[in-house]
Structures are given as structure tokens and as C-alpha cells.
Image 1 (cartoon, rainbow over the protein chains, first blue to last red):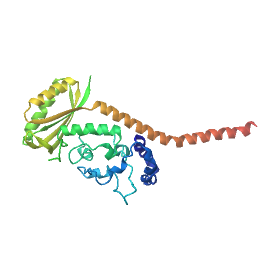
Image 2 (cartoon, chains in turn red, blue):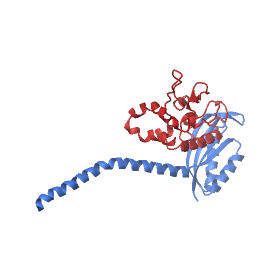
Image 3 (cartoon, rainbow over the protein chains, first blue to last red):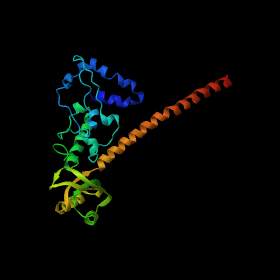
Image 4 (tube, rainbow over the protein chains, first blue to last red):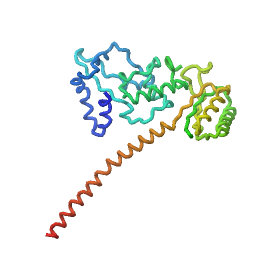
Length: 140
Length: 140
């Protein structure tokens, strides 16, 4: 999974043409350990995101036709945009990865890679401590 | 053992400006008397808190960057705890993180240089192959 998420970052200069066929390449990769992909359908509680910017993070378009699932491959925002430091002061950025309930959104929904999710979690917890982000619920 | 820390604290919103200045000056003298130095003082202004703290919904955020040993932080935090207008504070050590960021930056710069070099190397290689070719007829 980490290899998949990292790949687009390194191939970025090669242009957008490569990424356009991303969703289709998902189909043959069904032998991957994560075969529970289709669960992402409609019944799953949508991760709203505080600032609305979270939309770009989680899963792709809704189901089409009811048989095939085309899901855009999720990539780590911090890898692609080369955001080196994840700081607790940057609460607008962190807010994209906090659900409306105040919870940290799991990376299976946002596509953030493991090392960055670790830093992200630390930063969110620090921001909560200094009242930049809520522990629970929407910021009052 | 010098370390760099970031100290963010929130003071109550109904505090007068001159009192705030006095408080900051007091803190700075505390730091310097404990053999530390205050690098920067940033007043981030009044901001709405993400949750209620001591029955306040807003607070004035102030950010200090302090250099010194851990004992400096110990003393400053003790002071903050007994200072009544300060409603919340957070200290984060940033030198390790800064080191990591510098390393990443260096790596990225090195990568850029490598991508610029091959053009020069190719020219040098061309000249190297051309020179013996020019010499061989002369010796023959």
C-alpha cells in the first residue's frame, strides 16, 4: 500500500496522463490483502471534514450501475504536495483530517501514508491540547 | 544541553494590553534568569477557542520560542501555572523536528542538483570521445 501511495509522488513530473488511468488499474489488483473495497459504497457514514477541504481526501465517486466499482486511487496529500512539516499550529490543514465529531479520520478513508498519519495524529493531539481543535464535536 | 522549545499560551481575553506586555516581559526575564534565551515573541491575537476553557470562549494566543535546557521550561511552566490570567499553555520541543526538516530540505536540494547535472556530464563525455577521435588521425 505504501508503495502504491508513494508511486504517484515520484512520477509526478511525467504528467497527468498517467494518473487518468488510475481507477481502472484498481481492478486487476483485487488480489491485494484489502479486498473489502466495495464496502465504501453509500451506507458508510461520510467523512464530512471541518473545512470542507476533506472532500478531496476520502474515497471516490459513488457506485455506478451497481456492479462495477470505480474508485479513484487515494494518495497521500502530504506526499503529493510535499508538505514536510505537519505542525499543530496549522489547524486549517489539520481540520481536513478531523471528522465532524472531532475524531481523527482513519487513513483508510483519507489515503494518508503511515509515516504521515503518525505525525498528523501527534499534531492533531497537540492542537487539541491548546484549544485549536476540539476534543469532541464541532468547534464552538 | 541547549534545546529549542516552542511555548504557546493563552491568556484571558479581557486582559488589558499593558498588562499583557508586562506579563510577557516578566516571562522573558524569568527565562533569561534561568540561563535561557527568548528567540521570538509572536502575538497571534484573539481567537475563538475550540472548546470552553475556564468559562472563556475566546483567548489571546501568544507564541514564544525559547532556547535553553529543560530546567528553563520547568521554571517557566511553574510560573505560568501560578499566573492567573494564563488559562492554557503548551510546550513543544522543536529542535529535533527542525533537524529532520533541514535534512529533508538538503535531500531535495541535492536531488535538484542531480537532475541539473546530467546535461553538463553529457557535454563533457562528448568532448572526451571527440578528443581521441581527433588525435587518432594525427598519430596514424
